[in-house]
Each structure stands twice: as C-alpha cells, then as structure tokens.
Image: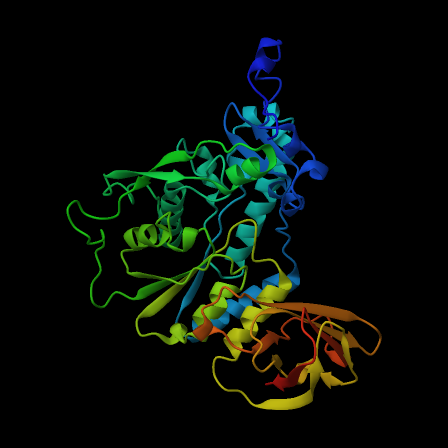
Length: 432
C-alpha cells in the first residue's frame, strides 16, 4: 500500500494556503501512475478540500472553424426538416468550479487555468448559437454557491444538472431561470463514490470517502407522479447524451427529470454511458425516433470532455441524418478490408453526391478510418466510430458520413482501414 500524505505537513510549518496535501505522491507523476490512468495524468489533489483534477481536464479543444459552423448549420437544418429543433446542453469545464484557493494549493495558477478555459468555452457556446443551435452558457453557474461538480468525480452533481436544466429553459424563453426550481421543495441525499476517488484507490492504496450532496426530489410526496404540467397537445422532448445523463446506466443525477420539470414536457432519455460523441445520437436516429408524433425538441447533452467540435463526429451524425430516408446510390467498390490500409484508385466529384456509405456485413462496432485524396495530394481523413455500448437492435453495419464543407471535392483516390479486423467484406457506395 502506498504511503498517504498526512497532516504532519502542517506541523512542519507548511500552511495549507501554501502547499496542498495530495492523497499520495504517486498521483503527481505520469510515470508512477497505473498505466490505465497515465493518459489522464498527472493528477492534482488536495486532501484537505477533497478536490482532485486530472491534467486532461485542464485542456479543452473548443476551437470552432468555418467547417465546424457549416456542419452545425447543416445538422440543425436536417432536424428542422423533420419539424424538430436541436438544442445543445454543454456541461462546462470542471476546473472552472474548483475554488481558486484550492488551485493555488495544488500549484496551479487560477488565471492561467480558468481564464483560458472560460474564454474558449464561452466562445464555443456563442458559436453554437450563431449557427442556429440554442445553447445556454452554463459557466454562469460558477457564480452559484451550491456544488455544481463533485470534488472526486468527473460528473456534475444532481444540483448542477437541475440548475443546468433551468438555465436551458430560460435560454430558450429569453427569461431568467429564477423560480423554475422553486416548486421542488423536497431534497434527497445522493451519495457518489467517485471515479476520481477510484484513481486515488488504485494509485495510493486507499479510497477517499464518498461524497454526499443534495438532490432535488422531482416527485410529489407520497406519489410516484412527476412534477409536470403536461397537456395532451404538449410536444415531446428527447434527451441524447453521455454518462452525465446516464450515470450508472440509470440517469443517477435525474437530468431527464429536471428537464421534464423545467420544460413542462415528458422527456425520453436516449443517453448512453460510454457512447462517445456519436453513439447515443446514432442509436436515437437509427430507432426512427426523429419522426415520432409530437416530438419538437432534441436536447444534445455534450460535456466539455467531448465537445461538438470534432469534425469526424459531426460528419458522421450528418451522414446518419441524411440517410434516414432512402437516397439514390452509386456503387464504387467491393472487396475486403482490415487493419491494413486499402488503397482504392477511385475518382469522383464530391459536388455530385451528399456523402459516402460503407457496408461491413455483420460488423457493427469499432473504428473505420476513411481518407479522401485529391489529384494534387490534398488529404481529408474521417474517423467513424460505432460504440459497442449501443443496444444490439439499434446497431447497423452501415457506416456513413457527409461530404458537407469538404476542403476539396475532386477526389482522385481513397484509403480505408477498419481497426482490429482482418478480411472483412465491405462495399463502398456514394449517395445523392
């Protein structure tokens, strides 16, 4: 068992305001961490306050390019064609909610950590709204007193989820969120063991205590009926998200209930733990749910760890949207694919097609990489992901992506590779 740092540091004259007391020294170096945590480390911790932050949380790629904007606009337009508004609920960077004095004790400079994250995340949210996708800037929650994030877990707290839902409603209405949660007087207690506490256990040999926080109770006393005011003609809402809305595969933080309460509408939760950027959205789209009667809003919950700026993921979602209805296709190639690159001498103009489909019969999970190459050597690579966490009945062995906003359209050849597979039959088609 690793030796833990104890309060003896204070007796040596090291003030808590000067030096943090990490849970153990092995957290502070990538080399001494268990291998499965090395990509996320080192970890900054302060056992006095209980906070733990991974080095991966101090980064955030919220860069929005012209290509990103055009893909957002095209995705929003596809939803609108189905009579549905796409809304984004983006959980903000967790380090913004770490008290500055705690960051200082960890050896981090608050201005160098928090200001760049705040600036880039808020610019990302502003760009989503400019692209026609409503999204509240949840960094305003840093001004609240209640715990929005856990100290020893990467997710938001139930209170953080509830306040985020209230801000979403206020953003859609152009009003204040004040009072939207006022008619939920009862509070429960929620206990979170914590994923970052597990890092401490595996690295230091001792697990910190679970955190207990308040959780709003969205049921009437003595009744299982939700606190809703739903009329028969009220359109429905779908929540598509990550483990933030599907913690322990049961929405432990009551995100869907908070949204149902603040939006006065039933909410169908399609969130998926471990689904990545596209898994839950693909499952929902494959289900045919976008054409469900009464649906008017899809809320795409996306935490700061998987922002909606990854081009390949956006191309994949747009491809899924555009192939919900049958389209004319042109056969391009049939053969076998595997871990080694397949180099196809196939030329076409992307201006004449909406996108590409690759079929891998019987193979419906993993990563498929496609590289488009122009006559003058320009390259664009798209990485398509299919999560094995998707329910089996919602999987498909068809991979698709959109040609929207490509840097070039004169494709002279393409390369394909399917990870961890050998001699898998595949067919490539273009769709209009």
